[in-house]
Amino acid sequence: MTPSEALERYWGHTSFRPMQEEIISEALAGHDVLAILPTGGGKSVCFQVPALLRDGIALVVTPLVALMKDQVQNLRERGIKALALHAGLSRREADGVLNHAAYGDAKFLYVSPERLANPRFRAWLGELPVNFLVVDEAHCISAWGYDFRPEYLRIGELRPQLDVPVIALTATATPKVAEDICARLAAGGRTFRTLRSGFERPNLTYVVRKCEDKRGQLLDICNGVPGSGIVYLRQRRKCEEMAAFLQANGVDADFYHAGLDGTERARRQEAWKAGQLRIMVCTNAFGMGIDKADVRFVTHFEPCESLEAYFQESGRAGRDGARAYAVQLWNDADLVRLRQLPALSYPPLDRIEEIYQQLHVFHNLPYETGEGCCLSFDLEAFSRHFHRKRTDVHYALHYLQQAGHLTFCEDIDTDTRIQITADRQALYDITLPEPQMLAVLDILMRDCPGIFSGAVGISEQGTARQAGISVPALRQLLYRMSLLHIIRYIPAAHNDLVVLHHIRLRPGNLDLQAARYAFLQDQCAARVQAVEAYLTDNGECRPRQLLRYFGQESPAPCGQCDVCRAHPEARKSTEARLRELIRQGMDETAILQLCRRPDSGLGADAVETYRRLLDEEI
Image (cartoon, rainbow, N blue to C red; front, side):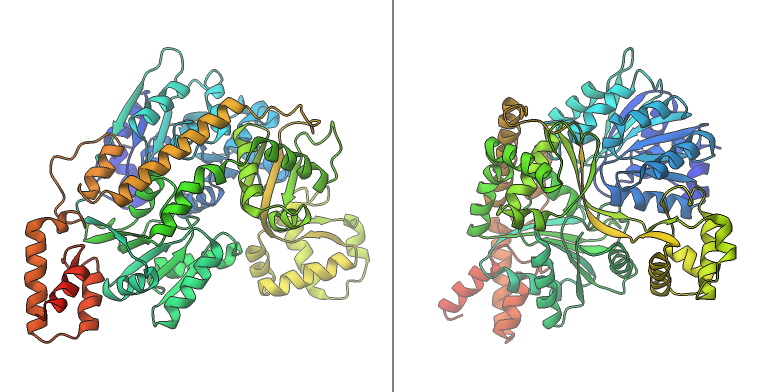
């Protein structure tokens, strides 16, 4: 089977997107490849096709559990066997996944980066018939990148054990980050081929607007630009409030964030993808790995923390090639918050050490214990208990992760787990109060090997379907069975996890790597300065600013962004059009709404121009 035949058989496409075929060819030739493709460029196909054409299984390292689950589900729907190994699995479940990967016929094994240092995983590594080592979100391996993850540094340690090609992929990498990725993943005798697709998006109009009434501006965008849209905010509470505001003003919108349970997140995501919901108001938890081509606008209600994040999120608009808009709203208060970010993201080191000790106290872990513990962590309860700011705790845990002391996994969905505690033979001798209990037990015994010796994950939907009952009815039935001491019932949960990498250290013995701390804080400050420059530089074409940041020069201004539309010739055109609208008697409210729409074709200063014309009594 050729790459083109695999593409058509499993994806239904007859041709590759730009750069995909070149990347696949280099990988199949046995070369290490760094692929830098913009959001929507089809990165997953670049490793999935070559892995399908070789015997064995592709080992895919990805930091996002939600994206991992989404890709595994997509592959299974295409008839391709794929597995996932992440922090939400018990030891028994993890061993089951690894056993299937080693001796089954799966083609992909997705692993979270924290698994790479796990001795049990390393012990299995020699049994896995790996054909490619895939590094997704490869910018995470570089301390120069915007989303550095120290666990990614473990990937290079696998190279001596795995004499296979590496396929590293990212949507956002500056030249310095790309060089660092290749250096950290290099193996003896191998050289990386870096293949970079152009970042130009000629159909995507970038608009930056400074405005005090951001809600009114957003409402004008939602009402003025037809089609599907995404609105990004930073906080979950603000997402809920903004969705309620839009709904109250007649806009078909809903909110999405990682605080929703998995079932509800999936329902809202599918409704939006199917066009049953027009606008999604969300945190950056939404959008990763979602392939929806006809998004007409992406609006950032607040500035991102980096241009990399902004470019990736705004790039979810207009993947079908039709005109789309990336709109960034901001005001002076946003700049104040942005400038505070380096200090906020890196609390003082003595405070971080205090939070480290309090983490162990909170979970009753004495000194010299705790290595390898996986703790269910309630950030709100912890912050209240120790009278800490929530942001201090959040960022302290992130730095403790960057310093290699723990892994902080946010918003992990864990499956319902069941252990049958009653003796197998006794189940058939006792009289159960409800006939459905025996039916459910039969299903669990058939579908879940090892359920008598430990708690194993079950599919609530699958079990309920086989038993002919609803999922809520199944949950109630399992609860009643637990009261009868027939099973141990651990309901599905949605929470944060902390995995401790070593025993609890005494005060003063925790190495917080002051030099690394200073370097990372400086990098954060540099990214903030780049975002501020993008917001406030009204003299250069927006796409040209973004392309230069990523090491690419644009030969000419785009002619579409707010900066290009503010040039003298564009201003003359804007004034002439407004004069004509005034002569035609258009209502003032309607003109102002038109001025604020990104698709109006009017210049960025259209509102000011209109008000000047009014002052001149035109």
